[in-house]
Image 1 (cartoon, one colour):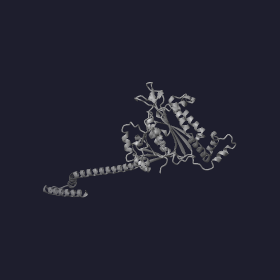
Image 2: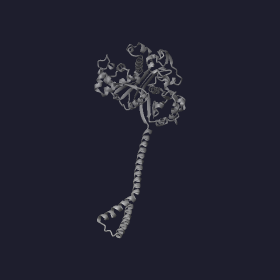
Image 3: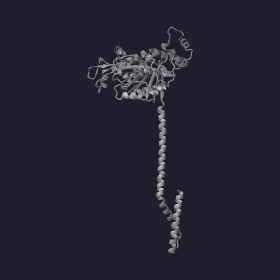
Image 4: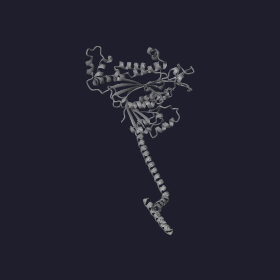
Length: 464
């Protein structure tokens, strides 16, 4: 570039000087100093600039375009690198590992593992003479008849609305169903306090549930029972999961007092109890998975979940049934006791283990990650896949086929948990998740919702 400019400048300078000198000689001009500056300096430079201007503009444009292309190329490369990193990250399955020590389920059709058998056949609601729809006519429902006596005869429930009565009765019924497991947890919390915490140990010595009125040396007896070290256990977390539409109507004080009274009666001190309420709506299943993800990091705590809902209430039906040609209300409750895989509970053995695969968009990836892609149960017809979605949903079959493609799981392995829940669907996916814990011990249960296609859940007694 510099060579071209200098060559052009010297050429123009030579021509201009030659021409001017001959011209001045012909006219006998005596040039001044200013004439030399103008004719031998400014004019050659101006002519050179005019000659080179198109080339300079072209070079500037090409340089600008080259820089622009280079910048775009660098941006594209950075974008591709980021996309590749994100893809690699998204392809990597995020595992949630948990263990289950108890599970109970109750609905209008069955209790516990009986659900699995009944879900294999068509299920119909029953005519409910005590329940009326928005036309003031008896309607069909999935009522849990066994809590009717508790609802009608319990004086403490008399002040509550019908829906709240039934929900509280279901919570109480589920607590009683788990009394054995909760009693063992109470004993473990006591032993842990006696071994690790002097202050809380005194609280347990004074607790009526652990005092022997016939003994004169109560403290010594309790301490002698805890000679060897015990796995540390700091807290029992009670999670009560309710439908979002109860948020502004639910008084937490009375149910919490009932739960705390029940657990205190088993020998647990208030310092070891934490009761939390969750009011979930459309994103209930996503919130549930996120909560379980948090639980896996609690290494010295045990979590007891109660999911419960009831719409066996004429006023509730009047509020929610508009827009439905036929609204079938139901009620259901389910519990499970879950801990991190690092937690060991005294005198309790995990009955199930849960593996939740996040960022897994196909079942085959999850199965391969657990070395289960060729499990013997796949060649049999017995159902073991619990689908949490409505089977009448458009394109559901296509979504399921896509998810289970390349695996040995086929349609005959599907069960649909919503079949027994009518239109009371707010917490149905969480209830269905817990139903998946009731599969036979010799089977690996699979829980899946097409609405949450990158979340795959497998339940089994043990994993490699």
